[in-house]
Image 1 (tube, rainbow, N blue to C red):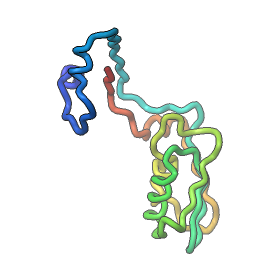
Image 2 (image 1 turned 90 degrees about the vertical axis):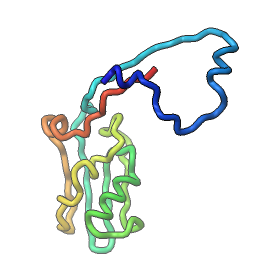
Image 3 (image 1 turned 90 degrees about the horizontal axis):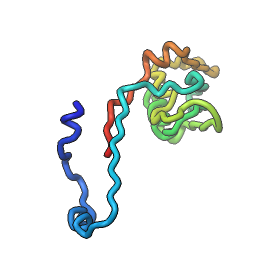
Length: 139
């Protein structure tokens, strides 16, 4: 896998001419970083609170992607996106997470109870069901 990662990638956008700039000389600093496949493993277990009403839904979660959480909730409960509000909590959870705890928790499982539903993952479930980062190499 590391050998494949070192091969040139597909250029999707090109701004300027890197080769020409490097040819001008100067000081070059090179480094290689490697991160194995791993879970986020935030300090505290992921948690969220969601409430459903026939006309609106709301959620409170530590998320870096409230729009994604809104879309997932709207699709799961059959509402328009405009009728779902995701309130981002000021502390806790989501350290390095690109998905919300709600969307990770499969919102289709949230029953339409008309009462708030609180979801807290155990440490074991968080590690077992996390969306793992793939191995990465940056140079």
